[in-house]
Image (cartoon, rainbow, N blue to C red; front, side, top):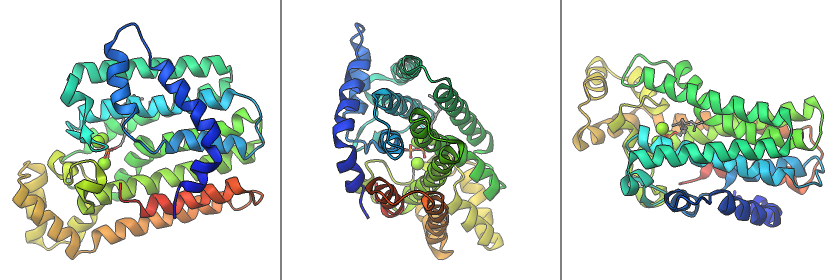
Length: 324
Ligand code: 2DE
Ligand code: MG
Ligand code: MG
Ligand code: MG
């Protein structure tokens, strides 16, 4: 599966989005475009703004407002990444040094704040209070998800439900909002909005489940991020929850020592990976991604058969099969 059909269908609109991204990242304060463009031009997939463009097109939208909303969505996303790499103390993203490694944590947080502000200004330009409501709510929910994640970090008693609440908030909320503002701007009905919202939510859950599997099972060269970052951080993701639950008493003691007491050496990462493999925790994590992918597919099923719909369907499998 590929995102090529979606890329091809959204090409003309995404060129306009990219123009707007560059212009709205501009500032007389030189450091702002410098830091912003480092991340913006680093070869991200632009998946979220493509969801906005396509979900508007799906309902026959003809105007220009979807361009601004898609740009807002990408700015929200970029702001969260700048902040995320500070919170996670990450060194690598998209195969490059993170902004915080080059310009420092302070610049990363502050440029993220600038982009967040610009995102909201564009939403106001669009003038849809409903779109503003959906996207501003998503921003709050994302932050809530990150704080919830922080509050359960290094806690091996974290449940699968806790984990799902975290990823629903920190990742799926933005996918959902990106997909829901399309029908909003196109003046589609409530049922259509809910269909796209459900598609976005479940696609986002699948996306993060795969992200969390790749953090253990991926290759740094594909990922553009370091493998094992989640382990080193004491982040409790589904692969860890499953391996811990299925482990022997001795193995469970290993997890508590490694994660709760922070004994996260490379040797312990290897051992963790061994246990995750032993208990099939990565393939079960991917199986959960497939499960949410099916729900995303069902959400789109009632829509008329168009190239847009099949492109969005294919994105589900792409997100599940992706290696970066
Ligand atoms: C990705 O998780 C989650 C991203 C949300 C980050 C949001 C923050 C709050 P990962 P990767 C930090 C900021 C909120 C705003 C600006 C509204 O697994 O593996 O850490 O790509 O992602 O580092
Ligand atoms: Mg991170
Ligand atoms: Mg994070
Ligand atoms: Mg991750």
